[in-house]
Image (cartoon, rainbow, N blue to C red; front, top):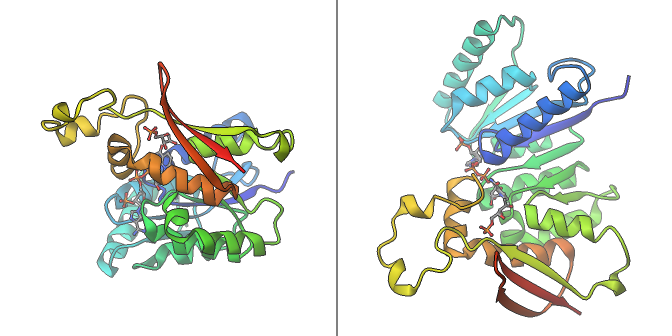
Length: 276
Ligand SMILES: NC(=O)C1=CN([C@@H]2O[C@H](COP(=O)(O)OP(=O)(O)OC[C@H]3O[C@@H](n4cnc5c(N)ncnc54)[C@H](OP(=O)(O)O)[C@@H]3O)[C@@H](O)[C@H]2O)C=CC1
Ligand SMILES: CC(=O)[C@@H](O)[C@H](O)COP(=O)(O)O
């Protein structure tokens, strides 16, 4: 039997986190097994989230039998989480499952330090930086969706990546950066002419300044392509997301940005990146 990879999901109740669980379930099904089985290809070591979706967090933990479950909430939230865990275990007929619960502002840091092979960081905001650094310093591979880790602490993350014993300590999850990183695995640096970071333009693409006066939050959250969390969707509507992604690409791929060209194609706004 192949040793399963141990995966920790930070921000497990969000858009990235719930999709990660779907992928883990899908891979288990492909392997003819289930996520909680000893022979599952990926075993979930720890889960972490905020305190808004404790019932979902508990259901996820029971499904994947996480060893550690973390909430950024209070002691009362941890108590509620325990009750939800017991209820979810009862309703699915599982006995004897009692994961370690950690709570408080640093709970995700504890989750990131829990033994794992890969830590997926799907937390929103710069609060995700310390868990990223913790996982890298522990020698775990980081699958990084939390772009704010790089925006807020690019040089710190870079130093932790450089000090890691792993050949590939960090892989990007953000779709454009994942595509760029995969493309860059072929050929040589000298062969790169330019990199193009695409942008959907969000729901307000093509709007004039006047038209933007009356737009509503509901419209801003209606992304044309993606079903994502509130922050990244809002940032996408204002194009702030793309500015963050330029910085993310800079720190992630170690490229020096020498020129930016913004250009609309028929379907997408492209940021062309000429690297030295
Ligand atoms: N969604 C997507 O398709 C993409 C997302 N990203 C990036 O991935 C990250 C996550 O995005 P997304 O999944 O959309 O966001 P969501 O808002 O859907 O999910 C955020 C997750 O973080 C948790 N969380 C919030 N605060 C804390 C905290 N203090 N400690 C621990 N966990 C916390 C939330 O828990 P709770 O449920 O309790 O609030 C939730 O599980 C962002 O950086 C985003 O820019 C990048 C590319 C694509
Ligand atoms: C799915 C993903 O990775 C997001 O970052 C998405 O690409 C947002 O795109 P826009 O900001 O171009 O709308």
